[in-house]
Length: 329
Length: 108
Image (cartoon, chains in turn yellow, cyan):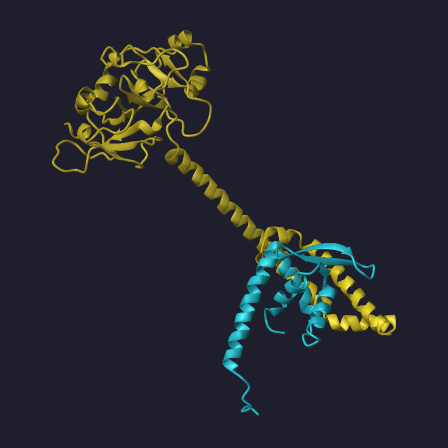
């Protein structure tokens, strides 16, 4: 059975009809030659040929896709049945539509937080550093995701040789209002070469560097494009930074809403100068636990086990790496 | 008529010249001295089946009675098939004859 036959079956049927007609004419001619009158000659020919309709039907069926045919019939039957009970049909269709919609919404959420990679160049080179299964190790491991203390981070940062770069970050929030009612924004404390390792460049101003990883606390914050638009109304660089100086002054390093979960305009950042967040900085160093992310160009170093697909870390999909780097403390 | 022999007989009839269905039926009947009767109802399905298999090809022409008729001619594939069918048939006939053996008169 072929599709070509299926689509030409009407023409084929007409063809057969003409052919049978020609046959009858020829057969009648034979009977006429034997001296029959035209009418009985034709009847005799018809009798000899048999059931013309059945003949045509069998050919038509041979050229049909019975599966398709019965599907179409079932479909029409279903619609007729639905028309008999419109209320039931409406409820069914509505619940199906709702179910489909919810499914799509859930998938979009999963896609955004879990499946989509970070909006940075070569996200597949990034990996999260984690501590192997709790065994033969000391320290505070109450947190899940496995997080690192600042001294551990310093050791890893200075001694690791398996990666092109490592970065540390932890969640934090910052009070935006200088006085009165506190207004908080979600942010991240990040290590000095956070942006270099991620390969993200600011649209305006500058981001901090590893050399600025000290307690002077005069570097400022890096804010997201959305934050810039919302809080600073997209003002040009220096002026805005200066005006908002005081309100952001309690934070040293700050990347507001760095990770965008959805597709949208490319990430844009701005640096806003800040001052005197000494206490925050110290807190970050000594109290906060840090999540470590590493980037390596090329294949993983020997001795490093690369496992892909793990839990998301703060709208952030990264692969975990265990090995020397994580065990160094 | 034996199952499967109609196709072979049609192919054999078309070896001489293209013909339409009516002629084919009568040619088979005449050639067999009217022993074989071609069921007209099964002739046309057989012709269409052979056409689908590419063993014969159809074209419309004008018959000897000056009527439009659908003519069939043998294709090279049909010729090949006829040779194969004929040898198969001869084997079959030979085998059946050997089993039957010479008429002994014992059946009577």
